[in-house]
Length: 153
Length: 140
Image (cartoon, rainbow over all chains, first blue to last red; front, top):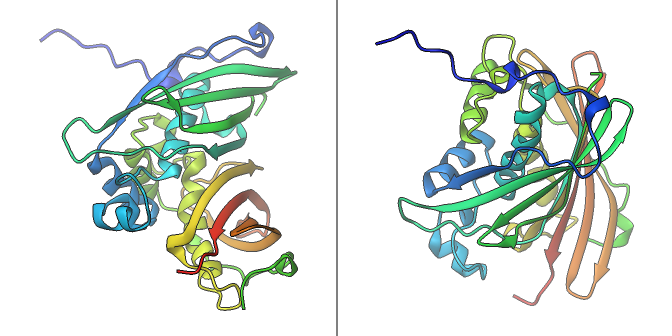
């Protein structure tokens, strides 16, 4: 086996330079897949044990179309568009999302795919605002999602 | 009793101190599928949304407040915002103070805006987590 290069990790990417950024510029997109296993892991890690995230019976009882992903899991995944790009998560100064539509996660191997994109929405010195789009099956699952980073941090 | 506009300003005692550990950060980062190297190692940084681990426990106290008469199964998380002074890291010992900022009643919907201030052991503000919940007040 030949000597392998370490995989390119976010922090090893060159530092983002605020002076080079323009409004409307796109960040590298991200696609994640949620399965029921993802939900169990997030429930355990976060302590959010609401049964709508693992029980079909309970989800139906409260009128949901099926077991849904934690909104906070979608929110956490969406921010990766920003932190993968900026490298250092310490640069994040604010983050907001509105939960527009639940992400239904089927009980099979494939689960469901959620797609995230980010666009530079504002540049003010070293403070950058990123607008994030999150869709599942072509429908928006987050609205008004926006993160701010301070590249001077 | 049910929640009303008059509950704006209601606040709750600080949560018991929560100690951020490298192991919990690693578990959380793995659960969100994030391999950012900042989240590993002994002096690791917590993912910005790690704050959810602490808010969940604080919200439970509000949801269980008999004065508000809320039912967990009728609560929907409407939106979530975070303002950070800095990111949490392993070794931080933090407490959260939750307050109800505003309550709006729109028909059967009770819209609750609540925010949680997270302070570190030096009593410095680390983050404010602002949340909107929608509680359905129906007959059932």
